Length: 386
Image (cartoon, rainbow, N blue to C red; front, side, top):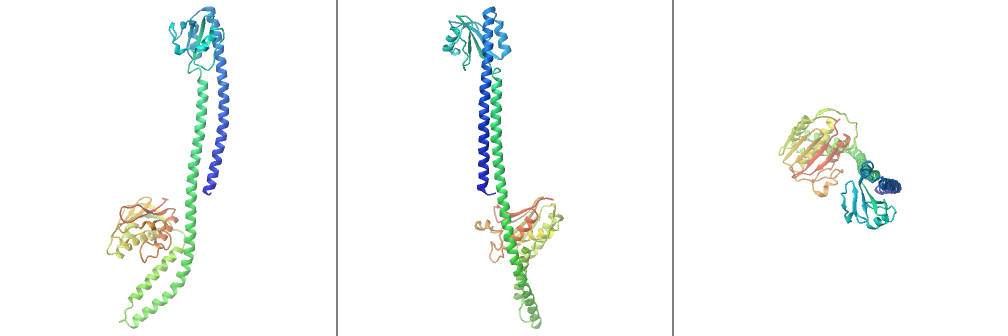
C-alpha cells in the first residue's frame, strides 16, 4: 500500500464518518425537538392544572407538592404589583425584577399562559394574580441525557478515526520496513550469486598458485615467499567472505550461553589483536545458531580492531549482544549505507563483514543496528528470544 493509496483510504473513512455524524446530528436535533415539545406540553399541563387548583382552594401546599413531584426549582404566586403571595422557595414580599420576564408576565396578567423558552413559565390564576413555575435540572434530565449520548457518540467516532489513523500509519511504516528489507534481501541475493561465481573461479587458481609457491620455497628455502603466501591467504579469506554472503543454509538453533560465547570470541580476537584490549561481560541463554552468531559478533569485533580501536567490549543481555569500541567511529555520511555490501568505513576493507553480520541477525528474526555512542562505535545485534 502506497502513501497515496493510504491517504485515499483515510480520506474515504473521514468522509464516511462525516456523513454518519451528519445523520446522527440530524437525528439528535429531531429528538431534541421532540423532547422539548414533550417537556413544554408537560409544563403547560402542570401549570394550567396547578393554577386552576390554586384559584379554587388557595392552598400553598399545592405548590410544595407540585415542586416535589415534578422536579421543579420553584413555584410561586405573584400579584400585579410584583408582590409574592405564596411560594415554595421564594419568600413573600417584592419579587426581584431580575427574575421577571416582564413582557411575558403582562401576557399572563391578561389571561394567557406564557411558556416560551425562558427560565419561568407564567400561568394566569385571576386577573391580578399569576402562577410562576421555574423548571429545575431534573425536569430537563431527559434532554441532558440525550445531549450526553450525542456527545459520547461523536467522541467515540472521532476516537475511532484517530485509532484508525494511527493503525494506518503503523501499517505504512511496517510495509515500508518490509519493502526495504525485501529490496535489501534481493540485492544481497544478487550480490551473493555474483560473489559465489567469482569466489568459485578464484579459489581453484589460488590453490594452484599456493602449491607452486610452497614447492618453490621447498626447492630454494633461501628465497622469501612469506609475503606471497600471506597475500594468497588474504585473498582466500576474501573469497570465504564472498561465499558466506552467498550461502543461505538453514540455521541450526540450540540453547546457547551467550556469555560463554562472548568470552570465547573475546579470547580468540585477543590473539589476533595484540595491541587492543577485548573484554566480554553479561550472561544469557537463548536459542540461536551458535556458529552463525559467533561469525556475526566476531566480524563486529574484528572491524572495530581494524578501524583502530584500543578497547572493545562485548556486552550480553537477554535479547541483545552489543559491541562497543573506542575507535574513530562511523562517519555520518556512511551511517545510512554502512550495512550495504562493499561499503566500508576503513581503507582496504571489503565491505562484507557488516553485511554478513546483519544478514545473520535478520535470519534469527532480529536486527543489527548502529546505536548512538559518545565515543567510537556501538553495534547492537537484537535477538528475539525463543
